[in-house]
Image (cartoon, rainbow, N blue to C red; front, side, top):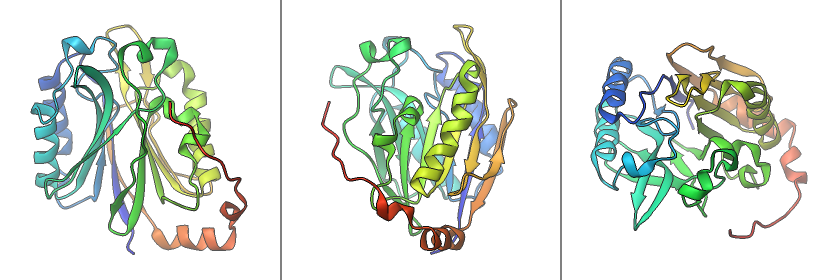
Length: 260
């Protein structure tokens, strides 16, 4: 199994303006065809973190979904990020995973941010998603999920890379920086954590701080507050060697998670 090239896209987001956000992303991604295996976008990358999805939510197989699929095809790489989406009379904070061959996978945010009233607007997800890419097993999560280690637990080494896409405020940046390392260390996996930057329409500031962390908690890349696009290579052999030499995962507790 070969090394994996992952591209972190940390950007400001225009409020409730899909066309402006997608145009910005087109420019940021234009150098990437043939240069990466996976592009990771922030949470709600077409709107910002909105509690008014009735004004801007996407429909399944709508314009934003089509953009993700066409972008994946053009780049020759998988592409993922979350959207406010309407389906069956309900709203979801839904991560889409688009592949160059036209395959589309999804994960609905499990833990809805109570302090913003997200649970009063969106329905929670009930199932984990594991994606295989070039022999790697990847598991995506969304923002507030980062705080819940039972949900993100890598039981039996079910995945090699955890992805967190976020709109995580600067006011709790210390929590973000600590938790992304904790999730990598306890799960003996790589973590790619992608946050937005800028200030949203509600006046909430975001410090970026996107990061790529290895299985031992070491930073392979850390962004500051500025917009950036960075491709990081994740060495496979180093992960396998660490898991073999320090197999703490074999002593993990067994447990089950009840459905909501």
